[in-house]
Image (cartoon, rainbow, N blue to C red; front, top):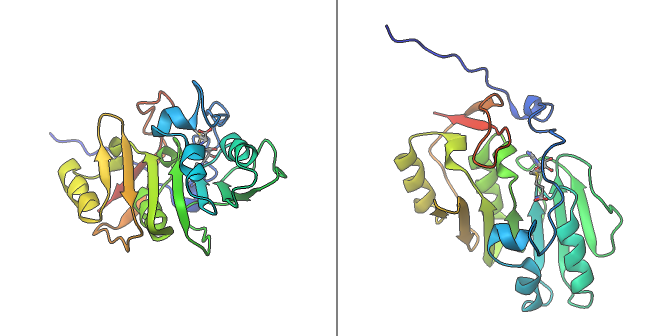
Length: 218
Ligand SMILES: C[S@@+](CC[C@H](N)C(=O)[O-])C[C@H]1O[C@@H](n2cnc3c(N)ncnc32)[C@H](O)[C@@H]1O
């Protein structure tokens, strides 16, 4: 006899109160470069990207303590760059750091009101409820030739893998399955043919070893 396993799904508001999302054991301390760093996770150093684009804007979603942004501001003081960090939890190490705007907000409900040349998310999407809405929004915040890069575990999206991948590709995203990294170049009006049902915060650890959130769609 087939058994149906019932999963209690949380909406975005309830998820923000989940112990999985507010988990203190998360690594929120990554630096710009070095062993525990953005350069290592993203495959490039954001400050090198910004150095060649004076006046550019970098948005770091799920920025944690925000060290990488602060270090970029220190490394490029006269570059005219705009640096914005967003995180659900107000754990910013230096909230008044010169040249950085830290915003305490939820990715899928926040609106930056501007475009960015670089949008990153280092190990943050794993904890977002509506991951496809998060991707759709990030795509709409890019400049015409902007770059979006994020760690992304497709096991955290409860959809048929081939259907999901083909929908991501149709919308311009590229997915590196080995590195579990999603990228997009250039602003897009993304449309996904899936309705968000809610998030499962009891899905267990993902490939990072930390408990993550599984997002459900139909
Ligand atoms: C593993 S930490 C990574 C922090 C930082 N990127 C780093 O590498 O140091 C994940 C971060 O995502 C944040 N986060 C989780 N869900 C979020 C959401 N829906 N909107 C904004 N931030 C979120 C958490 O508060 C946490 O600081």
